[in-house]
Length: 378
Image (cartoon, rainbow, N blue to C red; front, side, top):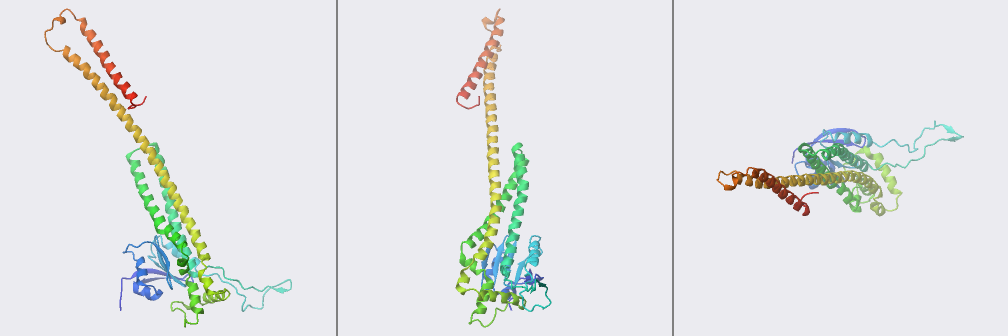
């Protein structure tokens, strides 16, 4: 007998009761009648894209941290001890059991009489989604809520950091914003690639949505004269649900029309597509705010760079002028006998004054030319 690596799963049935199981892939394949290539998508050691698809007897769900197999009467979720999976398991336990519905059959005669008429309960049409849709709804709600929470936490940290960077450009603030931008990019990829695109692709294909109607397939199998028995994984606990599905199917004219009607599931998926689209819009707005901040920072850096260039130009011009002045002083300071130096002491004063005027003129000429060419500001 083949055996594989056992992994921990939690099973939640239609009554909301749960149990921890250690199952290998062969035990899961036998339990839910699923192919090995479909089960491989849930393997954490292999890199597979996210997916929502239906098979004959199960829905395979691989979204973000939720990896589950949904049948018509139970849900198998991997890694039940994960802190992000626990809220989903608790919500499944709370919402999967159907509310008690009084169908008006076998009622006691001791009922109150109102205005001379016995207050009899009318047959109530079950309005709840099928089991697989209720489980799918909880999983989608858990994933969308988790990503929305991650987005809000990122917004809470990002906007103050961006404002602080705008007011004070420093290496610390730049590094902080860089890390937040990397986190935002990863989260955007998870929201778009692993959830939004899957829901959009599913909504565009009625055939894929029809594959998710496991209860409908079961009803069709029970109603078909070629089917000798119900699928083996259908437990006795779901007999009441099955009877309701059969009674509902008997009131629908034709199975063909029922198999092509995906409006119920489409409305469910669209609701969570809108929610994940809202999360995507928040991330898009945050990305635009980061881009605007980067543009502002680049403008500020360009301005500082221009100021440094102007300062360098001023210093270089001043250096040239001082060099000219030093050249004159060096020539006059040379210990060479010159006839005009005798009895002409006042010449030193005029040489200093004229050399200073010449140096200042050269400096102003350089700055005027630079402004004319637009190299420095006015």
